[in-house]
Image 1: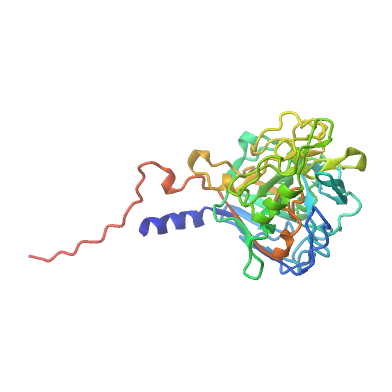
Image 2: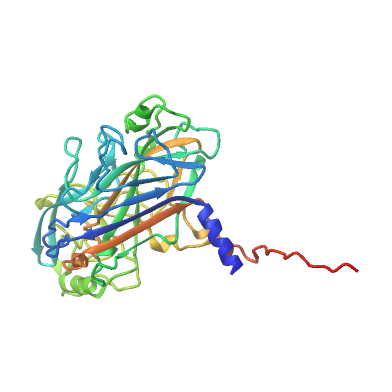
Length: 421
């Protein structure tokens, strides 16, 4: 028991960022990406973030605390966030979108795509997709986004140039989760399509005290502001990567049909790639705008109907933290290498880092919360789950006691009672 308590205290002590939120989806008549993609209303979406002594947080670049909170009421409040911010709290509701985490350097934000049209095909659904936000109109419905400033005070040297090997690793805590809340409908699978993205925009030296300099960080080259991290794709977390409900599996087997190299549908329904609970499958997210002439099906991909629309990006490997954007291929859909729950629970040296921060720095991070429309779990009836709960945290601690072979936690020796002769 003492060992368990000690391990718990160590994990709490090393907590870097804790973030919890609850989304209450109110609309009953809602549809996922594959059919209508109607608006899903969201309320009571609160985010609380906590830090440690060497890592402080801010929503406005001037007030630094161990804990900050942002929600639908204060996401644009002058007393909480900075003037001129482009925070957004889903508008009229969450709409399934798609992204491979690319950052638009002219707009300094992650590129999101939404469905422009969806028509039933011979083996699924024909998809047309357009960009959801641009450098003119940010306030489009469908997602949550806000700027978070992270001051990392560990170390005294500030290395201005972006060097991945010089940065400090942080890890996703093992208790991070996305689930259907108590007021929701279980076994619909909507929680398996949620994504949380962290797009690093730029950083300055940790001793910078001009709020305007901190909040004004963009991807533009400005003296004293490191914008090289804009070249990285956003880090995106996929929770519940191995969880698939019966409804999603049945829908896939009923709808999907193979395509040959020419794009023609062949074979029988149910002959696409395997899809079963307990196994992780790739998500072929939208990488570029898709038109009707592209003839893209939502089930396109090697793992599903076998058809690839163009060549995959060169050098695109499974998840590796702090990678730069690979050379773009012609593929309209890409198997994005998410950080998944399966990686989160790995132990010891097998545990991968989630993202990195430079020592003695202030980093501007744009956080996105959305539903991935191209997730195989985002089938027609998933959204009747209505209510989801999302919570996650970060830690600097890669190892816990159980990861060290032969390690035994120290025990407290009770003082001996002696009797005088």
